Length: 264
Image 1: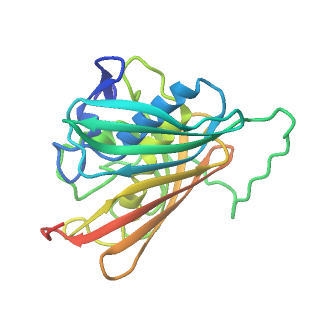
Image 2: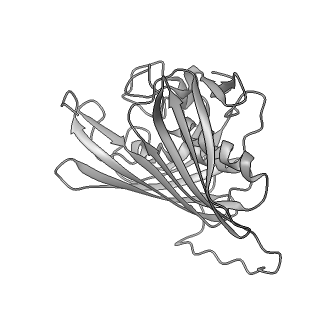
């Protein structure tokens, strides 16, 4: 298992480790680690002044597993509401971009209301075997995360409820933020809740949208994911996000769904 997802090689440059590997091509990156990298750099810019409440991460294409540069810019400054963006550039091409709304917190707004359909499930004991059966081994991204399925997952089709815990930093030597730990795993929701077999179909998210009223407390994040398919090559994954104390918000992913070998 890699000791992190990235090594910082300069103020704004990052070298990916094998833990970022995509399941479809080991020379490419899974969407979770780049999402976490971009959000973390925006959080560094905020420096505690406000909390990211909505994040749209767009993948402009395949993300090579090569050193990339992150650039952050403020699109809409403000004391209470602010919009920032970050891009990841590899080989002179922007491969991913995050746009994040952040909001100032208020000490006087002390009522907490969270709506959950049922009590949260407990964290199960570890289960043997790979969390994503069907992908060729070794695949290092899953090894950097603790996966504890409650229902579904583990190679089964259909909705899945899975507790997750990221075991390594996003950037070596830097403590990951709660939002980064969430982003690392949120992009895996479509794989956990897949409705078609891995050996016959690709399902590739083009974006990850997070809508959060708060960030996780503690290391564990629950993904309650379900995927819907149109029957003509398009799908969506909707995920309810929780930690051990309650709900956090939701994640959404638009999906390209195609038979393996089809032209994209």
